[in-house]
Length: 248
Image (cartoon, rainbow, N blue to C red; front, side):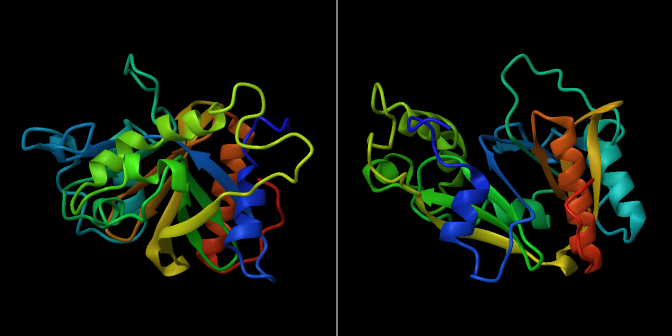
């Protein structure tokens, strides 16, 4: 890693957020949010006619929630392929309605922040963190109810921070690498998660699908299939209260 690059997700999480005895199972920078939610368009704006295919998922329980939610949102958990011409967002929020747990979490007031989301899984919790950057916090700081502004700022602000210096990014040559301060946006415990499954083309998963108890959830993207498989394996172990070996 050159001094022009931001620090890796695991290093930031371990140094800035985790307790001294809390190991990181996986961590990932995530840029951008898109919605597959009944009543919202892809940007998360109200759209009463959107997402009717998800109706009826919320309110069920058990494994049927996970299978139904992923199938409804992604056309079959193992066969999702984006048809959007725009670059795919790092996080897909799926739900059958705007009052779902996933939408409630992603719309909650966020810390004044700039940059990408940082998703972190430890044996104790699944945390969604936001890096706090003083020089750009004002530009993407959400007003009350202004979570959409934050969602649009995620990614663009992160890229601008890395490239704000022509040669060395956010880190000076010869100086210790700087780790950004982070703040918790929200956390999930084992009891909040119903299931976790791979999403993507056959033999090439692209997302780790985390389904909450009400059937809504999050699909976290990774460019590498082996990373997605490890993410899923770790979340499943976390959900069951088991030790994770570090392998998919």
